[in-house]
Image (tube, one colour):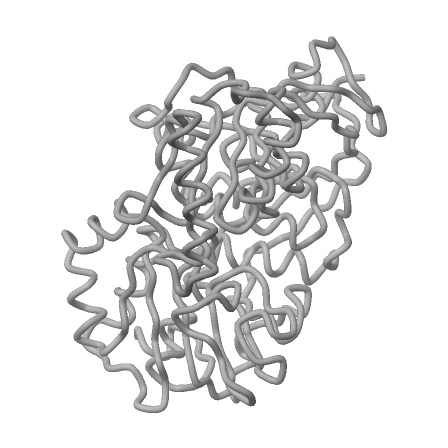
Length: 421
């Protein structure tokens, strides 16, 4: 019996010919990362271990992104811990304000997440890099400390669910809609401690940006990782970016999956996740009566250039509804620069949107757009749990950038075709 992508990558990392679901292994880590919330704890634990140097200063990334630019004294202290440790250890991949980006958008952009690799991060959305064919998963801060010291970590090999998407994607339906629909079908625990392999014609049709969005939210289905087999689009994306050599991994034709699911998405509507869970997803047509106070376009899920281009194509020539605040945050400095060069920022400003330097900001209720009691928000981010973006009595809906932009214009959750005829 053959192996799945996750099994093959973990076997390689463990120096084994074969691994099986449920097996406990020690495996070499190719890349580890932490941010301004999780890395300070890891740094403190690293110092307790008594190791003087990290295992490899080129295989660790420290990216302060959650509360940066620092919103208060406490967040400034957190970032200072990262900054000083990076200098002390001569960490190559430390990215400060002005050079940084939201970590899960920045890592692929810099070619630091590659096919066939084991990548761990002290952030649950590390699973994003599975879109590039990596086994990427979130870990705790104490585990990150161990990885920084040793360069390896224990794993329990997960079983794999294969999800195949058939059919041609309808207009305004993309990666965000596919993953919201999927979570709605299998639930937030449908892939708990399992790897997911995303496949099929609809995945092939998606851009890399759309694929990254899907893998980013594998954790919202409980997934340990969300992988896609590298193809020509993947290799073209990495041709100008890859920071080191890599070896792509593909599932065996006779791989054993715990479950196989097939969705026909040819008639799928844009999806909206209602409060207070990503699994509460419904067609946008069922949300057209819901008025919004704030719209946020950005985050590690949907703050890439393609996302901003999609939003701009709908906002062009329109104004944000006078009752609505529209906040747009490019995910990285490079995305910000490209958006400026393409004239997207002019479109956003003309529409009366607010534009921020890269930061996670409102996604986690950090800063730059907190919801007050009773307010309704629509966001392109990945979670809408109670209080996720502010007051516990606020309500947060999730959608694609296209739906978010259209909704900012009308003041209610709106299918983009209402704006673009």
